[in-house]
Amino acid sequence: MIIKYNDETIYSLIKIIIMIATKKAPVKATTNSPETDSRLQEFFHGELKDIYWAEKHLVKTLPKMAKAATSQELRDAFNQHLEVTQGHVGRLEEVFNILGYKPQAKKCEAMEGITKEGEEIIADTEKGTATRDVGLIFAGQKVEHYEIATYGSLTQLAKTLGHDEVANILHSTLQEEKEADEGLSGIAENTVNEKAEQE
Ligand code: ZN
Ligand code: FE
Ligand code: FE
Image (cartoon, rainbow, N blue to C red; front, side, top):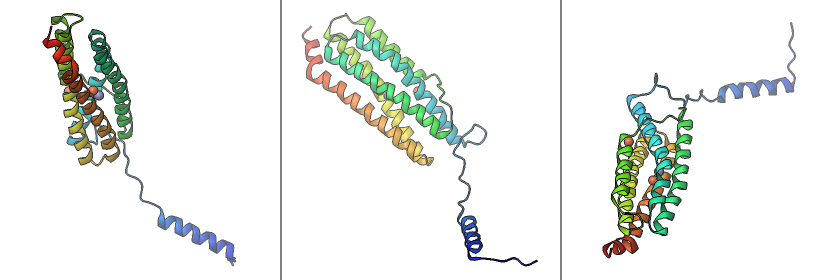
């Protein structure tokens, strides 16, 4: 049998050979699962579930704090941070998706405790006073500091585990928690504490 090679068939053969030769190695599956995750990855996953619970809990708690505030400035700050917090929930869902997990929350005992303390502060201070606002700022800053600690550690661990995109997302939230904390400090320093002193 005689096979005739014309230019066209030779070119297509070369093309096929180049395609095979340059074909990238199969991309490593990015999907994580409890069966294949390392201990550290598993720990990271658990911490993501914890902060996911905490953020969702805050979406329910921040409106109560806003409602309890005496000054318009503090009320606005809590309402503004509510919107930001809804964004944090969304970002965490994005993180779960990137890592191939379905978004799942695991009760954060710490956030439950901090927000319970906030409720106590509301119960123990008089409505319409600046002292109430001082207490709410305390509660709010405790919340923010817990989140700053968590997102700081999560960002670092994401980098260690090679999840660079996830690290960037977590870092954006970290920055916003810091801004919220500074905002609350500003309100305390500029107005609320002095007013409360005069009550
Ligand atoms: Zn947050
Ligand atoms: Fe926690
Ligand atoms: Fe926050």
